[in-house]
Length: 492
Image 1 (tube, rainbow, N blue to C red):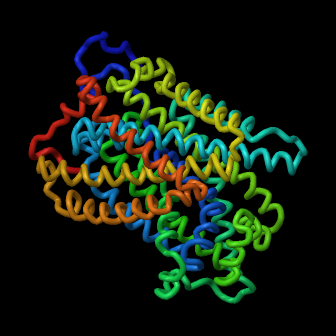
Image 2: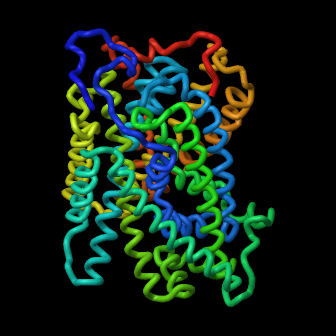
Image 3: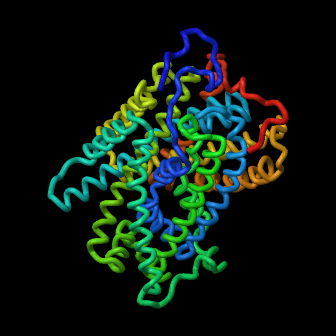
């Protein structure tokens, strides 16, 4: 239950001293549903896996998900070790600010806002396109993609306005349904022994296959498939015992995504056989998984999979909506964004104003894209998701650096693995992934060098804006300066 906000002009306080707070009793399961839904498992399996097979290291591509999971697990070690020392639901910006200073924290906040606004817009556009195609083919009703996308904005806006536990329940149902259909397909492929009973693929454990093709490109796509898992800390205020719930939810989400992607991508390859899988992925990637479902489970299962692809996209964009709304709420309370966005609903305990603002921004972005005549998949989805991928990987890299600096400076936790070794290894892995993404950014932006450079410049400008705001508004995010830095703080 929210209470009256602090009087105007009152000094900035740490979040636990502020009057406006979000409420909730989210457990590990609910938070895991939120962040795994953002990763959009079915969308990745049906959309990204064929692209990774065709353009990465072919039949060995499933192994890239295991490699990506290991890199991100190293990141998660430091990320979760620092949770107790960052009593703020601002996630990336709070971690970076506490470790590297207020200016860097504010800069990362603007990068996060840019990244989540664009990834939300990308998924809305894909949802609008996919819904329109399915409805048109099934019932003959033809509406433009943006109409269905705006309907998705309305649904997410309504759920985001209400208590977080309602979104958690909706995401739980949708997520279980999409995971179930993929696992049933996986089981069918395994039980039938792969294509024509010829045996299951072993390419993912063969060194010659792993290094064939373009493994670096495959790793880039695999890392992008995990985007969303890192948002567990955004739900800190609404979690039960966040010092335990947030770290556990982070590890569970990462493990679940990694195992699911690796297993399912391997099953997709096995469904066709190594050589045919590469050929099909190159010739018809969009229908690869649906056709496999029809081959192994029948036409009805293929139709169900197509419907669940829509619910997967809806679940993903709802999760991104909730994350973005909480970023806006946190930044408003930190006097970075207008204070009105920092109000919590008296009944729902939700960031209702921030949620409405998030919906309006999403709708405006879609209207602009539609008015410009952009293709919802080839242009809107590809461009915006490419930009978001760079931004979020860069934020994880900055967080790794912040973790190392914070613990070296404060000695608040003396465990070498948690505070230095694992974060440093994660930093190396994420640095390599970021380099791959930056080099291939024009490809992610539809092959346009101009758009690729423009995306990079936009993210750098967002980061630089943090230093400008820090100098212009000393009160902005002042709570980052009040975070305890004394030696001997309790360990997780």
